[in-house]
Length: 97
Image 1 (tube, rainbow, N blue to C red):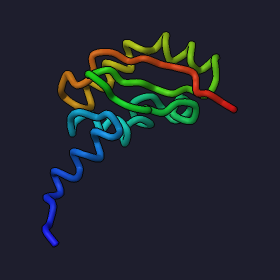
Image 2 (image 1 turned 90 degrees about the vertical axis):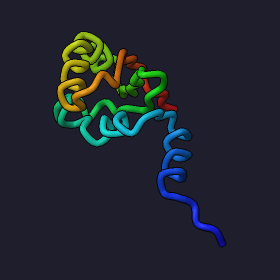
Image 3 (image 1 turned 120 degrees about the vertical axis):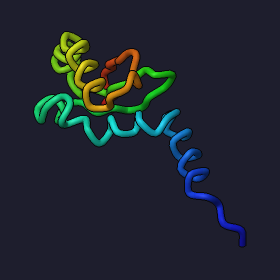
Image 4 (image 1 turned 60 degrees about the vertical axis):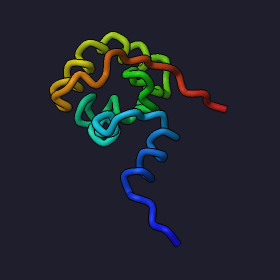
């Protein structure tokens, strides 16, 4: 059995989650630190596609609040990642069925 390099396997996994670069994945682990405990309880990053971060939100009130804080959140992401990884953030309401 031939071994597959870890980097190649990880690249396939990240592609499945629509993450194109390794720096973007840090947003998922830093989300609570970026937006704070309360907002993180009602939102979570869903994917990164073409430098756009898509964030799933569980309540319309929190959706509105996050949209108002979009620029602050982008600034914090840039500060944490030290790189222009995210060009835009799009918030959307989670489908609850």
